[in-house]
Image 1 (cartoon, rainbow, N blue to C red):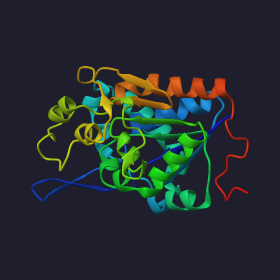
Image 2: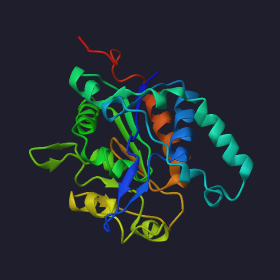
Image 3: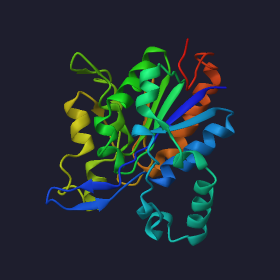
Image 4: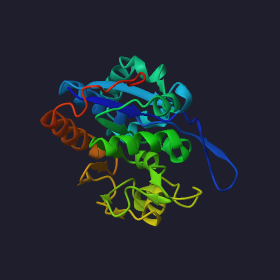
Length: 248
Protein backbone atom coordinates (compact mmCIF):
# COMPACT_ATOMS: atom_id res chain seq x y z
CA UNK A 1 0.00 0.00 0.00
CA UNK A 2 1.33 3.39 -0.98
CA UNK A 3 0.66 6.67 0.81
CA UNK A 4 -0.61 9.45 -1.46
CA UNK A 5 -0.85 13.10 -0.50
CA UNK A 6 -3.54 15.14 -2.23
CA UNK A 7 -2.65 18.83 -2.21
CA UNK A 8 -5.69 21.08 -2.56
CA UNK A 9 -6.11 24.82 -2.89
CA UNK A 10 -7.56 26.98 -0.11
CA UNK A 11 -7.93 30.03 -2.39
CA UNK A 12 -11.41 31.56 -2.58
CA UNK A 13 -10.83 34.40 -5.06
CA UNK A 14 -9.03 34.57 -8.39
CA UNK A 15 -7.68 38.05 -9.26
CA UNK A 16 -8.15 39.31 -12.80
CA UNK A 17 -6.19 41.89 -14.79
CA UNK A 18 -8.99 44.45 -14.56
CA UNK A 19 -8.77 44.44 -10.76
CA UNK A 20 -11.88 42.34 -10.24
CA UNK A 21 -12.00 38.93 -8.59
CA UNK A 22 -14.06 35.83 -9.28
CA UNK A 23 -14.78 32.87 -7.05
CA UNK A 24 -12.39 29.95 -7.40
CA UNK A 25 -11.28 26.77 -5.65
CA UNK A 26 -10.70 23.14 -6.60
CA UNK A 27 -12.65 21.23 -9.25
CA UNK A 28 -14.57 18.30 -7.72
CA UNK A 29 -14.47 16.20 -10.89
CA UNK A 30 -10.66 16.25 -10.76
CA UNK A 31 -10.54 15.36 -7.07
CA UNK A 32 -13.30 12.83 -6.39
CA UNK A 33 -12.59 10.29 -9.18
CA UNK A 34 -8.87 10.31 -8.44
CA UNK A 35 -9.50 9.89 -4.71
CA UNK A 36 -11.80 6.95 -5.46
CA UNK A 37 -9.33 5.25 -7.79
CA UNK A 38 -6.44 5.45 -5.32
CA UNK A 39 -8.61 3.96 -2.58
CA UNK A 40 -9.86 1.28 -4.97
CA UNK A 41 -6.26 0.21 -5.55
CA UNK A 42 -5.66 -0.06 -1.81
CA UNK A 43 -3.66 3.11 -1.26
CA UNK A 44 -3.75 5.38 1.78
CA UNK A 45 -4.67 9.03 1.24
CA UNK A 46 -3.92 12.21 3.18
CA UNK A 47 -5.07 15.71 2.19
CA UNK A 48 -3.23 18.98 2.81
CA UNK A 49 -3.65 22.67 2.00
CA UNK A 50 -1.61 25.82 2.66
CA UNK A 51 -1.64 26.41 6.44
CA UNK A 52 -4.15 23.60 6.88
CA UNK A 53 -7.06 25.83 5.90
CA UNK A 54 -10.25 24.07 4.73
CA UNK A 55 -9.97 23.38 1.03
CA UNK A 56 -12.19 25.60 -1.09
CA UNK A 57 -14.58 24.07 -3.60
CA UNK A 58 -15.37 25.98 -6.78
CA UNK A 59 -19.14 25.52 -6.95
CA UNK A 60 -19.03 26.37 -10.65
CA UNK A 61 -17.73 22.83 -11.23
CA UNK A 62 -21.31 21.60 -10.74
CA UNK A 63 -22.70 23.71 -13.59
CA UNK A 64 -24.84 21.48 -15.84
CA UNK A 65 -22.79 22.23 -18.95
CA UNK A 66 -19.82 20.43 -17.41
CA UNK A 67 -21.89 17.27 -16.86
CA UNK A 68 -23.78 16.92 -20.14
CA UNK A 69 -26.78 18.44 -18.30
CA UNK A 70 -27.14 15.17 -16.38
CA UNK A 71 -28.53 16.23 -13.00
CA UNK A 72 -28.17 12.72 -11.61
CA UNK A 73 -24.48 12.79 -12.39
CA UNK A 74 -24.12 16.11 -10.57
CA UNK A 75 -25.99 14.81 -7.52
CA UNK A 76 -23.80 11.71 -7.45
CA UNK A 77 -20.62 13.79 -7.59
CA UNK A 78 -21.84 15.99 -4.72
CA UNK A 79 -22.69 12.92 -2.67
CA UNK A 80 -19.28 11.36 -3.22
CA UNK A 81 -17.54 14.63 -2.38
CA UNK A 82 -19.50 14.97 0.85
CA UNK A 83 -18.38 11.49 1.86
CA UNK A 84 -14.74 12.64 1.78
CA UNK A 85 -14.55 14.54 5.04
CA UNK A 86 -10.79 15.16 5.09
CA UNK A 87 -10.84 18.01 2.56
CA UNK A 88 -12.61 20.15 5.14
CA UNK A 89 -10.03 19.39 7.87
CA UNK A 90 -6.78 19.05 5.95
CA UNK A 91 -3.22 18.81 7.15
CA UNK A 92 -0.89 21.81 6.90
CA UNK A 93 1.46 21.81 3.91
CA UNK A 94 3.93 23.92 5.84
CA UNK A 95 4.02 21.52 8.77
CA UNK A 96 4.48 18.51 6.48
CA UNK A 97 7.35 20.25 4.72
CA UNK A 98 8.96 21.25 8.01
CA UNK A 99 8.66 17.89 9.75
CA UNK A 100 10.11 15.82 6.92
CA UNK A 101 6.93 13.87 6.11
CA UNK A 102 7.38 11.50 3.17
CA UNK A 103 4.87 10.18 0.66
CA UNK A 104 4.98 7.70 -2.18
CA UNK A 105 3.12 10.16 -4.39
CA UNK A 106 1.67 13.65 -4.35
CA UNK A 107 -1.33 14.61 -6.44
CA UNK A 108 -2.56 18.10 -7.39
CA UNK A 109 -6.19 18.40 -8.56
CA UNK A 110 -7.05 21.47 -10.58
CA UNK A 111 -9.52 24.28 -10.67
CA UNK A 112 -8.10 27.81 -10.97
CA UNK A 113 -7.42 27.97 -7.22
CA UNK A 114 -3.87 26.54 -7.47
CA UNK A 115 -2.98 29.56 -9.62
CA UNK A 116 -3.54 31.73 -6.53
CA UNK A 117 -1.91 29.90 -3.63
CA UNK A 118 -0.14 26.70 -4.71
CA UNK A 119 1.76 28.45 -7.50
CA UNK A 120 3.74 30.32 -4.83
CA UNK A 121 3.82 27.61 -2.15
CA UNK A 122 7.38 26.83 -1.08
CA UNK A 123 5.97 24.04 1.09
CA UNK A 124 4.36 22.39 -1.93
CA UNK A 125 7.64 22.75 -3.78
CA UNK A 126 9.51 21.11 -0.91
CA UNK A 127 7.15 18.14 -0.86
CA UNK A 128 7.49 17.71 -4.62
CA UNK A 129 11.28 17.82 -4.36
CA UNK A 130 11.28 15.34 -1.48
CA UNK A 131 9.00 12.95 -3.31
CA UNK A 132 11.13 13.09 -6.45
CA UNK A 133 14.29 12.49 -4.42
CA UNK A 134 12.72 9.43 -2.82
CA UNK A 135 11.76 8.03 -6.24
CA UNK A 136 8.08 8.77 -5.67
CA UNK A 137 5.52 9.86 -8.23
CA UNK A 138 4.06 13.30 -8.96
CA UNK A 139 0.58 13.71 -10.41
CA UNK A 140 -1.16 16.91 -11.47
CA UNK A 141 -4.16 17.75 -13.61
CA UNK A 142 -5.56 20.85 -15.32
CA UNK A 143 -4.31 23.82 -13.22
CA UNK A 144 -2.83 21.47 -10.63
CA UNK A 145 0.65 21.73 -12.21
CA UNK A 146 0.81 25.24 -10.74
CA UNK A 147 1.73 23.46 -7.51
CA UNK A 148 4.91 22.14 -9.15
CA UNK A 149 6.41 25.52 -9.94
CA UNK A 150 8.19 26.06 -6.61
CA UNK A 151 10.05 22.75 -6.94
CA UNK A 152 13.28 24.53 -7.75
CA UNK A 153 16.94 24.30 -6.78
CA UNK A 154 19.48 27.09 -7.34
CA UNK A 155 16.97 28.91 -9.52
CA UNK A 156 16.31 25.95 -11.80
CA UNK A 157 13.00 24.12 -12.03
CA UNK A 158 13.52 20.45 -11.23
CA UNK A 159 11.01 19.43 -13.90
CA UNK A 160 12.55 21.45 -16.73
CA UNK A 161 12.74 19.39 -19.95
CA UNK A 162 10.02 16.99 -18.75
CA UNK A 163 7.15 16.26 -21.10
CA UNK A 164 3.87 17.39 -19.51
CA UNK A 165 0.49 18.96 -20.07
CA UNK A 166 -1.98 21.24 -18.31
CA UNK A 167 -5.14 23.22 -19.07
CA UNK A 168 -4.42 24.52 -22.55
CA UNK A 169 -4.49 28.12 -23.82
CA UNK A 170 -7.34 27.09 -26.14
CA UNK A 171 -9.32 25.85 -23.14
CA UNK A 172 -8.64 29.08 -21.27
CA UNK A 173 -9.99 30.92 -24.31
CA UNK A 174 -13.16 28.84 -24.29
CA UNK A 175 -13.53 29.48 -20.56
CA UNK A 176 -13.41 33.21 -21.29
CA UNK A 177 -10.34 33.82 -19.13
CA UNK A 178 -7.43 33.77 -21.56
CA UNK A 179 -7.18 37.57 -21.69
CA UNK A 180 -8.24 38.19 -18.09
CA UNK A 181 -5.67 36.17 -16.14
CA UNK A 182 -2.37 37.73 -15.03
CA UNK A 183 -0.63 34.78 -16.72
CA UNK A 184 -1.52 31.48 -18.36
CA UNK A 185 -0.25 28.36 -16.61
CA UNK A 186 0.92 26.88 -19.91
CA UNK A 187 3.07 29.95 -20.59
CA UNK A 188 4.62 29.84 -17.13
CA UNK A 189 5.47 26.15 -17.38
CA UNK A 190 6.98 26.62 -20.82
CA UNK A 191 9.10 29.54 -19.58
CA UNK A 192 10.49 27.27 -16.88
CA UNK A 193 11.51 24.67 -19.45
CA UNK A 194 8.51 22.34 -19.51
CA UNK A 195 7.88 20.56 -22.81
CA UNK A 196 4.12 20.90 -23.17
CA UNK A 197 1.73 19.14 -25.51
CA UNK A 198 -2.04 19.46 -25.80
CA UNK A 199 -4.99 17.61 -27.25
CA UNK A 200 -8.00 19.42 -28.66
CA UNK A 201 -10.00 21.34 -26.06
CA UNK A 202 -11.96 19.05 -23.80
CA UNK A 203 -10.32 15.86 -25.06
CA UNK A 204 -8.55 13.35 -22.82
CA UNK A 205 -4.79 13.84 -22.70
CA UNK A 206 -2.37 12.23 -20.24
CA UNK A 207 1.39 12.71 -20.47
CA UNK A 208 3.80 10.52 -18.52
CA UNK A 209 7.51 11.29 -18.32
CA UNK A 210 9.63 9.49 -15.74
CA UNK A 211 8.12 10.24 -12.31
CA UNK A 212 5.77 12.95 -13.59
CA UNK A 213 2.14 12.17 -14.55
CA UNK A 214 0.01 15.04 -15.86
CA UNK A 215 -3.49 15.41 -17.30
CA UNK A 216 -4.83 18.26 -19.42
CA UNK A 217 -8.39 18.66 -18.18
CA UNK A 218 -11.24 16.97 -16.26
CA UNK A 219 -11.74 14.48 -19.11
CA UNK A 220 -8.26 13.13 -18.34
CA UNK A 221 -8.68 12.39 -14.64
CA UNK A 222 -9.73 8.73 -14.82
CA UNK A 223 -6.87 7.71 -17.08
CA UNK A 224 -4.35 9.79 -15.14
CA UNK A 225 -5.33 8.45 -11.72
CA UNK A 226 -5.53 4.89 -13.04
CA UNK A 227 -1.97 4.99 -14.40
CA UNK A 228 -0.66 6.50 -11.15
CA UNK A 229 -2.52 4.06 -8.92
CA UNK A 230 -1.42 1.04 -10.99
CA UNK A 231 2.20 2.18 -11.05
CA UNK A 232 2.21 2.65 -7.27
CA UNK A 233 0.70 -0.79 -6.78
CA UNK A 234 3.39 -2.35 -8.96
CA UNK A 235 6.14 -0.48 -7.16
CA UNK A 236 4.84 -1.33 -3.72
CA UNK A 237 5.39 1.17 -0.95
CA UNK A 238 8.53 3.13 -1.80
CA UNK A 239 9.18 4.04 1.81
CA UNK A 240 7.87 1.83 4.58
CA UNK A 241 8.31 4.75 6.98
CA UNK A 242 6.03 7.14 5.06
CA UNK A 243 4.38 9.30 7.66
CA UNK A 244 2.53 12.50 8.36
CA UNK A 245 4.30 13.08 11.65
CA UNK A 246 8.03 13.76 12.14
CA UNK A 247 10.04 10.87 10.69
CA UNK A 248 12.91 9.56 12.78
